[in-house]
Length: 333
Ligand code: NDP
Image 1 (cartoon, rainbow, N blue to C red):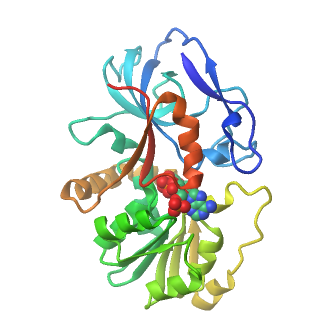
Image 2 (image 1 turned 180 degrees about the horizontal axis):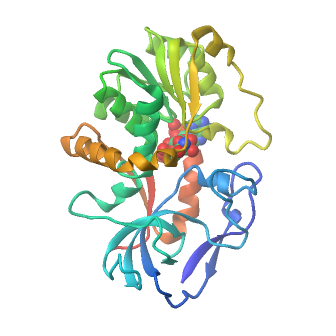
């Protein structure tokens, strides 16, 4: 077997040398276990946090131990009564060609219902994150203005479209004109802001949101968030989903930097972790699946080919390489 292990912990931006390709033997299966052959690996921004030796809502990766994350695979052999050889499954597997799993958190995926990769994107963790963060915390009302940062990513593009379904005006903030073109011309966003080229972000937000901002779904933090905060309406809601602009900072940024706007506008900021909503996942899956089939919720994927490209695909998240969900194709079914 081949697997990627954590070779060292990054200081600031992660580097290729933080990962090492290792050869390993897959152990013989015990009762309850299954052997899964990896087909697609999901690389996700939260995995950056797991590279630090710090307590968080998921434990850190261990040095010289396999990196693990969301993936889709095919069962090769099973001693777990819930799975049989040949089943397609989604779960947490190693960055490896094969993973021995105890079956916990693994579920079967049906390729006849939706492409199997969607279980890692719009019909998986990122889609659920968009759904619960926007609807439970953002509570978008028809006619309101919703701004989403990281708008062309897996979570962000779902947030914007779900806000459109709820009758809102939607503005996306992302890092390239091509991303903004996809959002506005293909996915129904009303306006877009390129945070890398806008001469003044505050002014760009003000111009794109003439009626102010009622809901700000924050995936990035930093300067982008400062600019949106300066344009809030009274009683604005801010689902705090991620802060990717801060994940690779050597030293913590000084902040929160302009929380005074929350006082003036009686704003609500609430952080959340998608797993908080585990009890309601099945309801959300049904709704996300229905919207997808109806064409109201589209998705995009950026798929890199080749097991050897997993670390670089992960690093690409911080370069903004992806439109929609970033995946790595490791093998054919
Ligand atoms: P994305 O598909 O959005 O990929 C990451 C994107 O972030 C990149 O494409 C890039 O796009 C943008 N980005 C990278 N660096 C920066 C930066 N310094 N400043 C601004 N934007 C940057 O990832 P996900 O959709 O999977 O995740 C989006 C956010 O949601 C992340 O912050 C993640 O941690 C968070 N998250 C939180 C969950 C929760 O339960 N709370 C669950 C899942 C995700 P661009 O070209 O626009 O810069």
